Structures are given as C-alpha cells and as structure tokens.
Length: 294
Ligand code: NCD
Image (cartoon, rainbow, N blue to C red; front, side, top):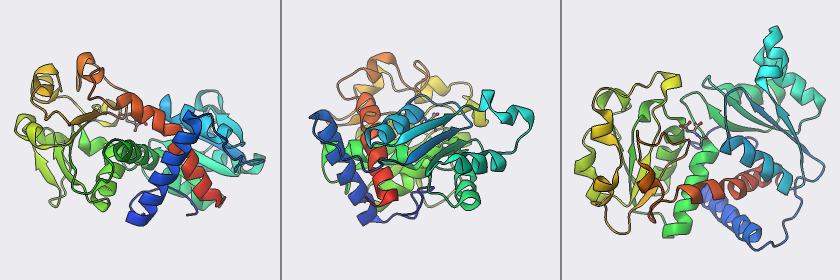
C-alpha cells in the first residue's frame, strides 16, 4: 500500500490484516508493552485544511508513538491567507522534509491529488463528503474487538448519510467484511444508489440490527435537519430500550447531543463511542506501519 486515500481498493484480507495489526498495537499500548519505533527518523506532516479534534490528535500521537517527528500545519496562520494554493502548500510541506502526509480538506479528491502532486505516501483524513478511511477502519477494529468475526452482523447507519465521508468509507468496508448494512434517514439524506438497503423509518429497523451507527448532520456540507428530524431519527432512551440486549451504539464524533443522540444513550453501557476514540491511535499506527512497510 503506497497511500491510503480510499478503503474501496482494500479486499477482505487487507482489511483483516489491518484490523489484527491495530488490535495488537492496542494491546501493546494498554499493557505498556514495547512499541517498535518503526517510523524512527521519519517526518509525518498533519495538513488539515478543516477543523478536527480526535482525528488530528490521534494521527499526531500515533506518529509520535512510532518514533516519527510530527509537524502540524495550521491553515489560519499559514500562507494560504496570502493566497498560496493548496498544491503549493503541499509541495512546500514535502520540500521541508515530510515523509508522510496526513491530509484533510473539504474538497473530494484532495488526498489523492496530494499523493499525485508530491509523490509522497498520503493518508486521507477526510476529503469532502467522499471518504474517511481511517475512521471506518477504527470502527471495524472496534466492532471486531467487541463481536469477533464481523460476517453476518447487521448495521444501521443513521442520519445524514448522503453528506458523510465516514459512511463513504464504512459502508463499502462493511460490505467487504460480510456485514449487512441498512441506511436510515429522511429521503434528502439518503444516497441515490439503488443497490444499498435503505429505510426512512428508524422505528421499523431498530429491533433487527446488531449495530446502530449514528451520524451528525453535516451542515457545513449542506445537510439540513428538516422539520421533525429529531422526533423521527434521534436515538433516545425510549428507542434504545427497543434494541436487542446485545446491540451496540456507535458514533464517529463530534456528537450533537440532543440532535442525533441523547446524553443518556451516549453514556449507556451499550455505547462504544469512547472505545472508537481509543482505537483511533493504534489503528492509525497500523496504517503508518503498512505504508512504510516496517
Ligand atoms: C467526522 C468527520 O470529520 O468526517 N469526524 C471524525 O473525523 N471523527 C464526522 C463528522 O464530522 O461528523
């Protein structure tokens, strides 16, 4: 693997290898066990043109845990404000000495362009509404650690699916891993592809899934919670009470509490939300190791 800009090119074997590597690293981190400095001497540049909390910080820590130098680009205080282009910005970061670029941008395809322009390995940390491969990877790592084999698990992905790059990576990866996915939301938030199972009625789906995966309304990408959205799609305690005992709740963050999920449900024992964040660092470590082949 030269870059990770999409999960759509990874088969079941590739995904499994990354899941196992991430899980192994998670154990090493938890036990305070040795982590080999496989990125020793290399420089990882975090180049985020869009806001981020967990993704940027966990890429940063993942790189540091593997012994890399980390440099962080801040768009607000950069020469972007003087009119420098994205291409020139990325070429500059490469010329400074970055060996790996982690790129987030509001336009689809920017991570791939970054790889083409610079020739460097690039990890896509989110490109517009297209993909967010490491988020989907840490999600399947979390699921694998919770359920074991993922084959046959049924997952509802709920909310603003059409504008979600998380769904853009998670839905195809879940399919490759043998899971059944149903997309749930108002018509305006469901993608057009006819081949995916869809429903506009959350209550009809709740009692037949193993995983409830909630998404934030992506207002910065044109997503609008229409009248009645909260009543129809929020996972509150009344709805959570109808889930099977084993069903888990997930969310990539940031949560808009009270909109797609209530505080009680987010904090309930069936919530894996904190676990998803914990798995972010070892998952990104596994991706870096795969890219440098060490
Ligand atoms: C997501 C993103 O930025 O795509 N967040 C994340 O990286 N965990 C989801 C979102 O913003 O809703």
